[in-house]
Image (cartoon, rainbow, N blue to C red; front, side):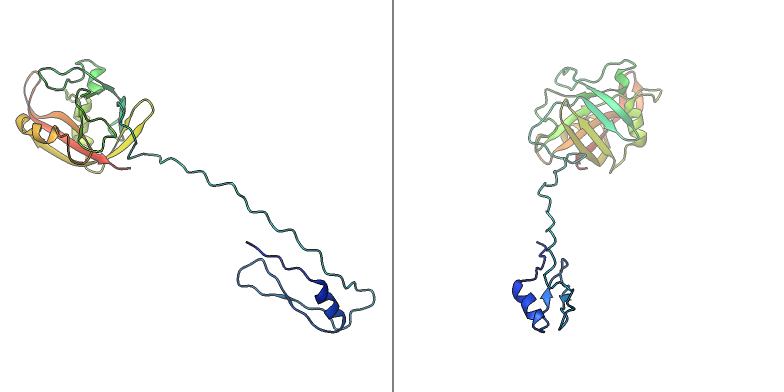
Length: 225
């Protein structure tokens, strides 16, 4: 708090008697100027103390707490509706096809579907969960025109993935990328324990026939701005 010095009546009387009195006063920490009165002031010089300056009023308005621009943790899980990957796709709509023979469904084989992301809603892990993998997948097309093709060409470790729901958003960073055979992919992809992760799988390698590819590429992403 800033202190403003005032001159007391005793100081004024002492100055009139010829005694030099110093009254400390400064608005800055560490400064110590003094007010000095002459031994015998001229007859027309008033000997009254100057009027004190009003003390500045400090603002009591608290600084509002801003929500992080890219949250990495939530109190509740949510259903994803949109996935954004800078440099890959601005807004990929999330679809929820049913499982087929206990295998997560893929986006439809349409012009719109090749730029969509499928989320396995029958899997118990959702974005915002404290452990386990959120299961996502996307298509690759033989002509290289689908979302999965661009991911294979551009998505690297350290890249950001933003997952949005109706009222929630979570940000992730890619922490790992592996290419495995279809059988090998299952163990690391289907995890309900361990740190929370996104697990996004696409077909890769050589195309062996319609809808049949030699490998699977999986990206794992951890919550991080």
